[in-house]
Image (cartoon, rainbow, N blue to C red):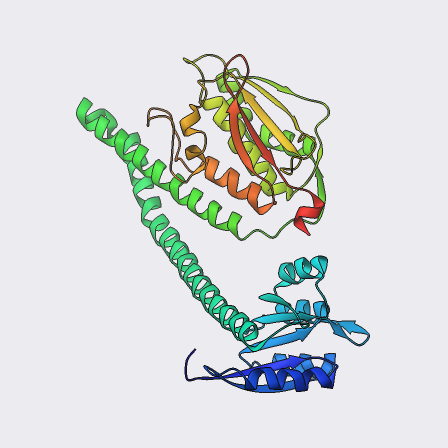
Length: 368
């Protein structure tokens, strides 16, 4: 920021503080500032929407309206420059609300000096630039992911289609080795297709908007079980569902997907090929625990070693070998869904053998 001029807009209905701010900026030597003043909400809104400033200093008190309202409005308009909230006194609640609403910093006017002001502005601008670089990279990755998935799926469908035709029409003409090669091609194509589907699902989960309504936990579980009906019949699984499942502040589609993944794992990862025994019950945190309300899926499978309890929630990390079908993305998707709901997902040993997979969905307070 050396030897540059930064345009600053001060939003404050007190002319005296504009004069004080002008003196503060005059005492900053390393950087030259051009200070503009907006004394009303409407004038400030128009000035901010012009996108001609490098940083905005917004007072919390603006006559009949307040700076938080202005902050939320311009952030919704995708304001390009960082906004620093000013206040007459330290107020923890306003500070927290300003940060949650998109402010880059919160400064108390009383005792504010030139050095602190310059440092706050510098950090806010640098942080904004870093955020914009990350956002640009994320957009590039999203585009790349779409292109890869779209362009790969087309030849993949061709390979899958012709492999199926070869298998139906010519398999009997192949020797045992040739038939094995064909089966390997079909399995490889199926795995790659599922990997691409999981990539896309994980990407979409990361873009999910936080939910605003509650859903019935029983309906979420029933929907997941309906999708798994064929697998449940094939394995002969015994499924027990508690009757007192909680209501969840969750997006029903994504919550169902998370439960689907957890129950599907319980059906797959059995102990020595035993009939799966799965129990689905409510999870309610102990007093003082902030992990939120959710659901727990209990199994009698092989269990998860403690050293793998965290690793299995990472993308493509598995605690078992390739002998058990799967892409290694299912639990990463579960955790992403939980975290997008201000919740969490984890595993712990089940008493008597097996595992308990828990997913929570935060609380209304967490998601506001």
